[in-house]
Each structure stands twice: as structure tokens, then as C-alpha cells.
Image 1 (tube, rainbow, N blue to C red):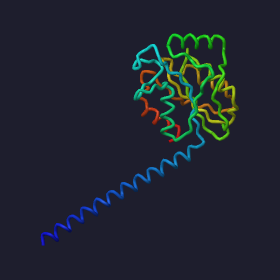
Image 2 (image 1 turned 180 degrees about the vertical axis):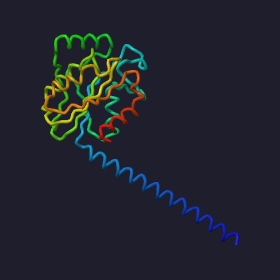
Image 3 (image 1 turned 180 degrees about the horizontal axis):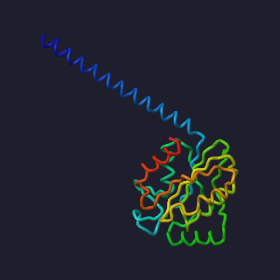
Image 4 (image 1 turned 90 degrees about the vertical axis):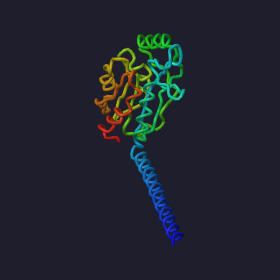
Length: 222
């Protein structure tokens, strides 16, 4: 009798475990299908960013323009762009210049200052071949001297953004968005430039994922 009872209990526990495993598998499958749907829905969204992390001359944790994760150096704006892509399933595009920017803070400031003074248009080495595929374009940048970095002007003047919904985001050292929303409206008169832009201080980039998610929810893209 005891042997029969033991066998019954063991069989019951096995079936119970198997049932839990099956439910877990179904939950994972449903989650994967949900993620695929989100990516499909947001296939018309492009996340564009320009980011220039300082790579030398200052302590990694104190770097004004970078985040270090698992030994990998990311620009502040790149980090925000990565979170937007992660949360929306959008396509990502990095604006990169032909001429590399210096990694040290002093040299980077000097080059950026010269570009602004001369109203330069740095040559770009990355280009978008299928802009027509996207209806919504996030554009991210660091604020340099209360202004867009000059490579952004090169990018904005290269394409026709007519009819696109433009959603700006930025990282800054205290100047918030400065006057960049007005600049984008001026440069893209035939686009819808969203005024509800996201900006975060370079000191709080790491802690901004929840704020980014709330902002994207407000925009209706997640």
C-alpha cells in the first residue's frame, strides 16, 4: 500500500513539474512573438545619433561625454540611442565623420570650437540609402556650446526629410536642449519636429532608462 501511495505521489509531482515547464515554455514563446510584433510595427522608425566619447585624458567614471559599461566606452548620446532602440525595436544609424575627432577633452573642445567658428560642414562617412523606408526619425546629439554639433548640419543638409516626424533627443552639460529645437524646425521646415524632446544631463545618463521609457510612452511609440 505504501509503495502504491509513494508511486502516486511521485507521479503527481512529475506531472505538476511538467505542467509548470510547459507553461514557462509557452510564456517565453508568447513573449518572443510579442517582441517580433513590436519590431514589425516599428520597422518604420529610425534612430539616428551623433556621439563623440572622450577616450583619453580623464578618468573613465568622470568622463563628461561617455559611459563605461563592462569595459566598453560608449558616448552618452549613443547610450540613450541604444535604450531607444532596445525599447522600440527601431533601426539604428550612427552619424560618423570622415575625419576622426580627437579623444582628449582639450583637443576635442578646440576642434569643435573651430568648426563652430567657421560654420564647418564635416564630411560624413556613413550614409542612409533607404530614408524613404522611415516615417519617424529620432535624431540624437550632444549639446556643444548651446548648439548642434556641426556634423548634424552635414547630416540634415544631405537628405530630404519632408513629411517625416522628427523626434529630437540630446545629452548636455547644463544647457538642456538649448535652442536646438528651433534650429531643427528651421532646417526641416517641411517636417514635423516634435517639441516634446528628451534631454538628460551627462551626470545622469546611466539612471535615465525609466525616464526614456516614460517619454517614449508619451510619444506613443511603445
